[in-house]
Amino acid sequence: MFSGIRGRLLVIAGLCLMCLWALLGPLLTADNPEDRRPIKLGLDLRGGTHLVLQVSDPEGAMTMEARTDAANRAREIIGNRIDQFGVREPTVQRVGIDRIIVELAGIQDVDRAKAIIEQTAFLEFKIVSDGRDLLERLPAIDSVIVAALGEEAIPDEARVEAAPGLEDLFQQRDTAESAPSAQETQPRPLTSLLLESGQPGVFLVEEPQVETVERYLELPAVRSRIPNDIALHWGTEVKAIAGKTYTPFYATEAEPLVTGEYLVDAQAIRDPQYGTPIVPFRLTRQGGRIFERGTSRHVGDYMAIILDGKVQGDPPVIRDVLGDRAQIELGAGSTLTEAQDIALVLRAGALPAPMEIIEERTVGPSLGQDSIDQGRVAGVIGIALVVVVMIAYYRLAGVLAVIGLLVYVLIVLGGLAGLQATLTLPGIAGLILSIGMAVDANVLIFERIREEMEGGKTPRTAVDTGFQAALSAIIDSNLTTLITAIILYQFGTGPVKGFAVTLSIGIVASFFSAVFVVRTFMLMWLEWRAPSSELSI
Image 1: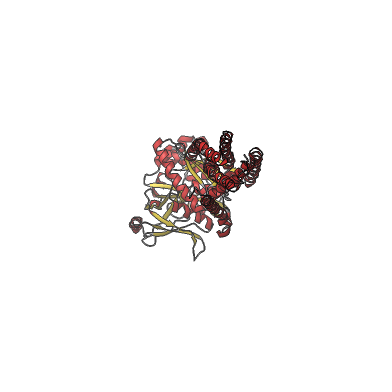
Image 2 (image 1 turned 60 degrees about the vertical axis):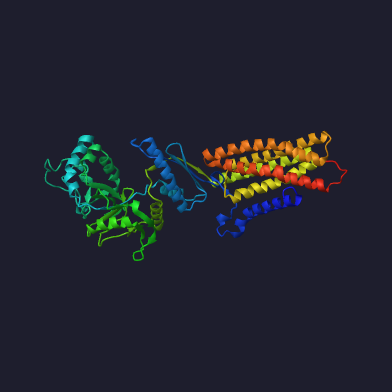
């Protein structure tokens, strides 16, 4: 089939039609304007965000193997989250021991994407404690805080006898009273900042004092005084009382009823009765049985729904035994988008370890458009120079090589579109480089043909011998370059991979163009030329 001109032309025509369909098909069939782009543009051309994340291990407790394993598992989970977030053509790749590179092209809401990527999404359901054990330990905790920081570091307003109630929020503490006793003026740094909310196990901390409470709780001596069966969590829903804002502070049981490892599905909707965002979720059968046993012992108690260490909304009362279905209520101040983000990270799974962003780079769309324009100019200039040199030096054979070069360009673009590859700025450089390689193969062939004709052979024999003699050199040069491109793709990151993809497609297309397409055109010319005419090369 390949020996006859008609069979060769059918192969070339069929391949060109396939490439044209790959380029024009999305324009004719896609409903989404974003999907109508036949070739996807990379981060450097379209604009977007480049993030480098690292496994967070501030205490250095993880081994190298554990960090590597955490990074591998986090890469899969982050990839799932980004896919559900809707980013097209993302790059999520692990590099080094514990780092992950994330490239999001064309993204609009960068902060939301970062929050979704970083969120650990560890879900727990815990019973709110009555707080008695914590209240009994508060005097001892206050004492160790004073011992650790020094009495001079405790502000005067922290000298109170006990934790004030909500009713004291509306009274002036500097009213004229009898001289306080020594006990009344003891420094109570933590007790003075915890306001009773009226619900057992739930306290309120004034917003400006949240960092102070966190600083106290981070002291090793304080952590050792907290009861082992108690866990402390901040809430997410800020409360406004008498013109001031307060953050809830919860004392819960240390052991959860069930965790998110049993979660199967989660969706975000609005409560049909109150209109507030909620996240209904479903557990596995095993998780449902565990949840049912746990809630059956605590009917009438408050249950905190904790995501990444923070209580979501107000803890609901367990009014009946719960099974494999329940819901997270976010509160009136939350939006449906926040609920959707929570549902997204819950479905994708919890990260095996916290991740922190150590590098962030943003590329604007205007910069990407400048790169496209400059790459287009460079490509046009390069092709134009190649066309002029080939026609001027090799005459009609150069014209045939230029036609083959047009087929090459069509194959490369169709290949990129068909494989849904992402075109980057280094990819444009690889495309231009492969153009030079395509011409280089034609130069080798034409020079061998000239040598054969100078030796006295007929044009047809010279063409056949020239292609056969140059074939081994062309295969060697293309094969070594293709191996290099494969290695770059395997071990490189985003832009380097883009260069490797376009270079690989260009190498295959240039080989086909030089060895098959140009030879077909030369055979056609030899078939149609007058017997007495010379070979124009």
